[in-house]
Length: 485
Image (cartoon, rainbow, N blue to C red; front, side, top):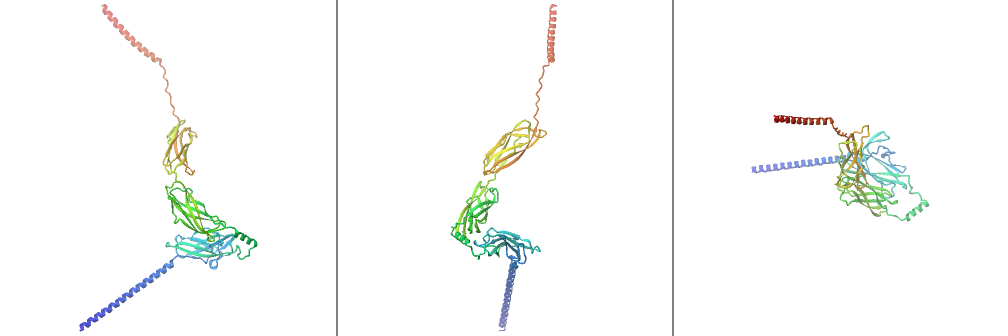
């Protein structure tokens, strides 16, 4: 019995100990979770603190300001121009210390501002403040806004839109609203004269024409665009209406030419507004394939927009770009002797090869050198791609122009040629030769007859004959004596 009781007590103690241990473990885990949550919260707060934003420097007076923002700064208007000054400071790091700014000047024809492309970059600089009393490191945003002649007095909001990349590379966007006060325009509460009323009635009765937007001009960043290059193309759009502005415009630029590929992010561009009689430029970047034939290529421009009353229109146009193939000519050196003689006429030859992908036109060459007088300009004519032409010319050796007619002379060959558009190009090659005096050839002297030698020969012959005759005579006498005896 005691043994059973003892066993039950031990089991009970063991269960109590396990339960206490599990409660402690759970408490530790809860504590860890609480610490993790607290740490994450602290990190989050720390990230929030480090987040970069722009704030207005409202305590200092910058150039162009009459008072600080805390004192009630208002943009100054003078001679039809409103000067806007917005000094900004950053609460954290900004990539490259540069921000991009732009303006929203309101919608419709009631705004007193003349619309333009006001977007620009502003860098962090040390700016003078308080009449030069100190310098402040800030982003100083300034704009000079042209005002309409028929502007109406009143308060007008100007929204400054700003974008930048923070130190982590994250894009940030902010807006600041500044109110401009126009006081030098037309008073809207002033009673109109009879003449003004009649003029307005005439305008109301005059038929309204559709605002037409046309492609005014196409400009490339390269004066001569070669196949194989990248090009930035500016397309200037003009609102031809003198009365109505256009807004909410979508411009789409495309090309069916496979050798011209778009490098910009999109074929479409959004334009908020183009005022009456004003222009706006859109930009696109392209790559021209190296195999693109030389010639003119069109970009199709499609525009959808609305007028100030909300009526929707569309317009089409074409932008033209010219593509050139690079002329690649190879010129062999002038084939002329290293030494030439004064007074001679020699033949010199040279060769031109067209290594490009297009025909070159009116290829010709001229030779210039002291002491050498060529026959004239050497004409090769048109050379098609992959072909070569060899020509020669007569050159008279006339002698150097200095104190001596002989010696080394250095000359040049200038090649002229044209592309398919009539543009002329030149290339110059150098050559040298030595002018020598003409060789003197002495004729051999004619030999005179030597009569003394002739008589010697004759005397020898006579002597020999005489000796032969004497010998014959002696033999004859001896034979006769023998016969007589």
